[in-house]
Image 1: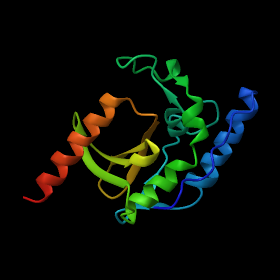
Image 2: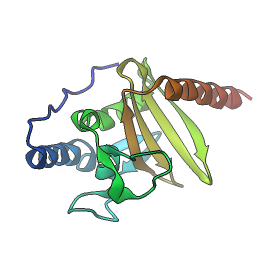
Image 3: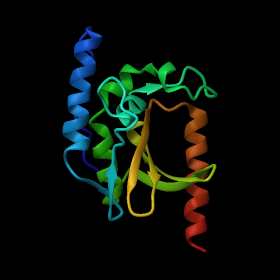
Length: 164
Protein backbone atom coordinates (compact mmCIF):
# COMPACT_ATOMS: atom_id res chain seq x y z
CA UNK A 1 0.00 0.00 0.00
CA UNK A 2 1.25 3.46 -0.83
CA UNK A 3 0.97 6.18 1.76
CA UNK A 4 -2.04 8.49 1.48
CA UNK A 5 -1.64 12.01 0.12
CA UNK A 6 -0.64 14.77 2.52
CA UNK A 7 -3.34 16.24 4.72
CA UNK A 8 -4.79 19.62 3.74
CA UNK A 9 -4.51 21.50 7.06
CA UNK A 10 -7.10 24.02 8.18
CA UNK A 11 -5.76 27.57 7.91
CA UNK A 12 -8.21 29.23 10.33
CA UNK A 13 -10.28 30.91 7.60
CA UNK A 14 -13.28 28.69 6.78
CA UNK A 15 -14.29 30.46 3.55
CA UNK A 16 -10.78 30.25 2.12
CA UNK A 17 -10.32 26.70 3.40
CA UNK A 18 -13.52 25.29 1.94
CA UNK A 19 -12.51 26.68 -1.47
CA UNK A 20 -9.08 25.01 -1.18
CA UNK A 21 -10.68 21.74 -0.10
CA UNK A 22 -13.15 21.87 -2.99
CA UNK A 23 -10.33 22.59 -5.45
CA UNK A 24 -8.44 19.57 -4.09
CA UNK A 25 -11.60 17.44 -4.42
CA UNK A 26 -12.06 18.44 -8.06
CA UNK A 27 -8.36 17.96 -8.88
CA UNK A 28 -8.00 14.59 -7.14
CA UNK A 29 -11.38 12.98 -7.73
CA UNK A 30 -13.61 14.74 -10.25
CA UNK A 31 -11.22 15.64 -13.08
CA UNK A 32 -9.19 12.43 -13.26
CA UNK A 33 -10.93 9.18 -14.03
CA UNK A 34 -11.29 7.08 -10.90
CA UNK A 35 -12.12 3.43 -11.50
CA UNK A 36 -13.08 0.53 -9.27
CA UNK A 37 -13.55 -3.05 -10.43
CA UNK A 38 -13.64 -1.98 -14.08
CA UNK A 39 -16.30 0.72 -13.58
CA UNK A 40 -15.97 4.48 -13.34
CA UNK A 41 -16.60 6.18 -10.00
CA UNK A 42 -18.50 9.46 -10.31
CA UNK A 43 -19.14 12.34 -7.94
CA UNK A 44 -22.78 13.48 -8.17
CA UNK A 45 -23.13 17.20 -8.73
CA UNK A 46 -26.92 17.44 -8.41
CA UNK A 47 -28.53 18.64 -6.34
CA UNK A 48 -25.88 21.36 -6.48
CA UNK A 49 -25.35 23.28 -3.27
CA UNK A 50 -23.54 26.60 -2.95
CA UNK A 51 -22.00 26.10 -6.40
CA UNK A 52 -20.36 22.82 -5.44
CA UNK A 53 -20.97 19.10 -5.95
CA UNK A 54 -23.60 17.51 -3.75
CA UNK A 55 -21.15 14.68 -3.03
CA UNK A 56 -18.49 17.17 -1.91
CA UNK A 57 -20.64 18.50 0.91
CA UNK A 58 -21.56 14.98 1.92
CA UNK A 59 -17.96 13.77 2.22
CA UNK A 60 -16.73 16.77 4.25
CA UNK A 61 -19.59 16.87 6.75
CA UNK A 62 -21.70 14.70 9.01
CA UNK A 63 -25.28 14.68 10.21
CA UNK A 64 -25.84 16.25 13.64
CA UNK A 65 -27.43 12.94 14.71
CA UNK A 66 -28.05 9.61 12.93
CA UNK A 67 -31.75 10.20 12.23
CA UNK A 68 -31.25 13.59 10.57
CA UNK A 69 -31.41 13.26 6.77
CA UNK A 70 -31.62 17.01 6.09
CA UNK A 71 -28.54 17.89 4.02
CA UNK A 72 -28.70 21.55 5.09
CA UNK A 73 -28.17 20.52 8.74
CA UNK A 74 -24.87 18.70 8.10
CA UNK A 75 -21.88 19.95 10.09
CA UNK A 76 -18.45 20.35 8.43
CA UNK A 77 -15.78 18.04 9.85
CA UNK A 78 -12.22 19.38 9.62
CA UNK A 79 -10.70 15.87 9.78
CA UNK A 80 -12.75 14.86 6.72
CA UNK A 81 -11.74 18.07 4.94
CA UNK A 82 -8.06 17.43 5.66
CA UNK A 83 -8.36 13.98 4.04
CA UNK A 84 -10.24 15.05 0.90
CA UNK A 85 -7.47 13.76 -1.39
CA UNK A 86 -7.57 10.40 0.34
CA UNK A 87 -10.84 9.43 -1.35
CA UNK A 88 -9.38 8.73 -4.80
CA UNK A 89 -6.28 7.22 -3.17
CA UNK A 90 -8.37 4.74 -1.15
CA UNK A 91 -10.46 3.71 -4.17
CA UNK A 92 -7.34 3.13 -6.25
CA UNK A 93 -5.64 1.18 -3.45
CA UNK A 94 -8.69 -1.08 -3.08
CA UNK A 95 -8.88 -1.58 -6.84
CA UNK A 96 -5.33 -2.92 -7.02
CA UNK A 97 -5.77 -5.09 -3.91
CA UNK A 98 -3.23 -3.19 -1.82
CA UNK A 99 -2.44 -4.75 1.52
CA UNK A 100 -4.20 -2.97 4.38
CA UNK A 101 -7.08 -1.75 2.22
CA UNK A 102 -10.15 -3.96 2.04
CA UNK A 103 -13.53 -3.70 0.36
CA UNK A 104 -16.88 -5.46 0.46
CA UNK A 105 -20.50 -4.87 -0.42
CA UNK A 106 -23.32 -4.16 2.00
CA UNK A 107 -27.00 -3.38 1.64
CA UNK A 108 -28.86 -0.40 3.00
CA UNK A 109 -32.53 -0.69 2.18
CA UNK A 110 -32.77 -1.45 -1.54
CA UNK A 111 -29.31 -0.02 -2.26
CA UNK A 112 -26.05 -1.91 -2.55
CA UNK A 113 -22.93 -0.09 -1.43
CA UNK A 114 -19.24 -0.83 -1.59
CA UNK A 115 -17.26 -0.05 1.54
CA UNK A 116 -13.56 0.63 1.04
CA UNK A 117 -11.60 0.66 4.26
CA UNK A 118 -7.96 1.67 4.75
CA UNK A 119 -7.71 0.12 8.20
CA UNK A 120 -4.26 1.41 9.15
CA UNK A 121 -5.36 4.96 8.39
CA UNK A 122 -8.83 4.60 9.93
CA UNK A 123 -10.42 5.89 6.72
CA UNK A 124 -13.40 4.57 4.77
CA UNK A 125 -15.10 5.47 1.50
CA UNK A 126 -18.64 4.43 0.62
CA UNK A 127 -19.63 3.99 -3.02
CA UNK A 128 -23.13 3.44 -4.35
CA UNK A 129 -23.21 0.49 -6.73
CA UNK A 130 -25.07 1.26 -9.96
CA UNK A 131 -25.51 -1.07 -12.91
CA UNK A 132 -22.38 0.00 -14.79
CA UNK A 133 -20.71 2.61 -12.57
CA UNK A 134 -20.28 3.69 -8.94
CA UNK A 135 -21.20 6.95 -7.23
CA UNK A 136 -19.34 8.48 -4.33
CA UNK A 137 -21.67 8.48 -1.33
CA UNK A 138 -19.51 9.54 1.60
CA UNK A 139 -16.23 9.08 3.45
CA UNK A 140 -15.40 8.62 7.13
CA UNK A 141 -12.29 9.00 9.23
CA UNK A 142 -11.45 8.45 12.87
CA UNK A 143 -13.94 5.58 13.05
CA UNK A 144 -15.56 4.78 16.36
CA UNK A 145 -14.97 1.30 17.76
CA UNK A 146 -18.59 0.34 17.10
CA UNK A 147 -18.30 1.19 13.41
CA UNK A 148 -14.99 -0.70 13.15
CA UNK A 149 -16.65 -3.78 14.69
CA UNK A 150 -19.60 -3.45 12.30
CA UNK A 151 -17.21 -3.13 9.35
CA UNK A 152 -15.30 -6.25 10.42
CA UNK A 153 -18.55 -8.21 10.73
CA UNK A 154 -19.90 -7.01 7.35
CA UNK A 155 -16.59 -7.71 5.62
CA UNK A 156 -16.33 -11.21 7.06
CA UNK A 157 -19.95 -12.03 6.17
CA UNK A 158 -19.57 -10.73 2.60
CA UNK A 159 -16.37 -12.62 1.81
CA UNK A 160 -17.61 -15.83 3.45
CA UNK A 161 -20.69 -15.59 1.22
CA UNK A 162 -18.46 -15.16 -1.84
CA UNK A 163 -16.69 -18.44 -1.08
CA UNK A 164 -19.99 -20.27 -1.37
